[in-house]
Image 1 (cartoon, one colour):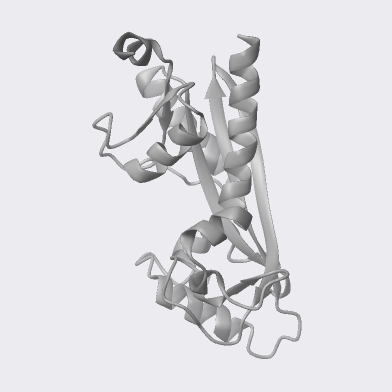
Image 2 (cartoon, rainbow, N blue to C red; image 1 turned 90 degrees about the vertical axis):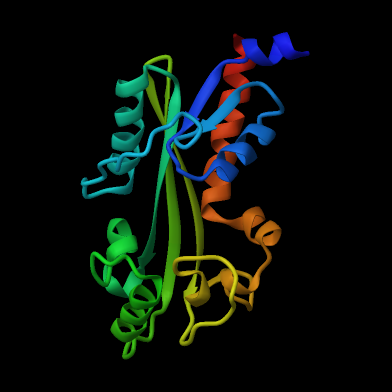
Length: 203
């Protein structure tokens, strides 16, 4: 049993959150050992200075791959509001400034939508995987609309003002399990997992 674990191929998730890496590892049913940046002792800031989610995700994954030479993946997420021409988009984390404050970001979105009738929006996550030196990307989208007020205490980012399609409550009012079933990030990770399982089966 121990020998099998040692022989498992390693996949680095370019996140500082070990919990996220563990979750993906569990979804892979033991086919690979998934490690976070914390697990491998990486504490530097990873550059993400491109104008698209796809390019940022690839940049982050490439940064880790170039450093360690191991298979890895990264993700970038943005909220895209129709009436704001797709903003905040790639700038979601710093929409209201470099302080990266969730409350400030939400307040600015609500302010900019004050006189807009169309409140439709979507969350989009792009996962970039570098496997055997080749880049693969997977996209997860959840559509919905921006509420007029913040509700809920769970989640993070824009969750208190985003109501997913088909639901009457915000992401921040949903438990993690319910949110993950329909979330943009969950959908992108599902595609990643399916690809990795298929790749492993072929191998």
